[in-house]
Amino acid sequence: MKKSLFDPKVKQELVSRLDKLAENTVPQWGIMKPEQMVHHVYMATKIAAGELKVPDRSSFFTRTVLRYFMLSGKVPSIKQMEKRPIETMEEFNMVKANIPYDDLNTERSRLKTQWEKLSSLTSFPERHPRIGKMNRDNWGQQLYAHANYHLTQFSV
Image (cartoon, rainbow, N blue to C red; front, side, top):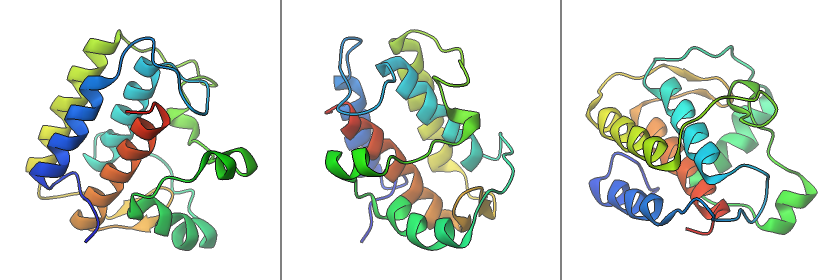
């Protein structure tokens, strides 16, 4: 069974990993700082909560191949990332869009609160802007996979 943010044990695992993140943690790939990464993950959760509307930019490729990876929780190898980096949605591209963020502890607290809120929701958007049609189970898997990807990026 795929991991989901909505599984209390899995959520606690993510929280424990998030708590290990330090301000001086260096990413294995990419250029975000730890606090930028946490804010990026937080912003992406706002789509699942229905708090942020992003235009549908899905394509056949993203609704099939990318969907598989985004729901699997698998993290590409560094070699794969160098060969074909995953394109960040412009609304969440912390560096290119120069999105403001707070200190790591504030960002960490905000994300934990959002994860708790999402776990109690029963209604979610019917579509993800990159991978198409979604149900609650898919959202839980996607939220886990996105957090896992970025926590792995920072070796936690």
